[in-house]
Length: 144
Figure (tube, rainbow, N blue to C red):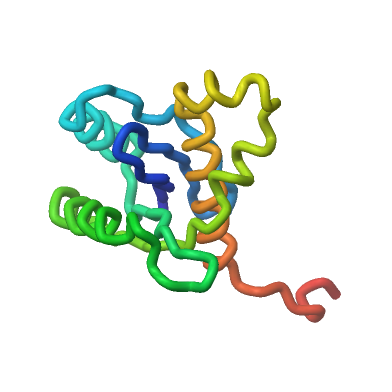
C-alpha cells in the first residue's frame, strides 16, 4: 500500500505520502498557477512514488452535511478515478487546515500559506487519519 494524501484546492493541492508503516509525511504542495500543470505534476508524483491509493480530504460542515466545496471535490475525485484508475478514499477533512495553520506563527501565516505548506500539512493530517483507520486495533492480549 502506497497512499497519496490530497488536500484539494483550486489554487494549491497539498500532498502527503504514507505506506504500510502507517506514518503520513508531508510532500511539497502543487502550487503551479496553471491547473493543467498541477495535474501533470500530480500524475508525475503518482507515477514516481508508485501510488496504489489516493486519499482525498472531503469538506464536511461541522453538522456533518457536505460543505460548499463538496461538489467540486466530488468532481475532482471522479477525475482522479478516471485519470489514474486508482481507488479514491474520501476522508473527513474538518478542521485539518485550521489545525495545520495553528502550528505556524501568526506573522508568518500569509507567506507560508502561499507556499502550500499549510495545504501539505492538512493533507498529512487527512492521510494519517486514514492510515490510523486501516491499522487493526491492538488488544491487551497482543501486549502480553
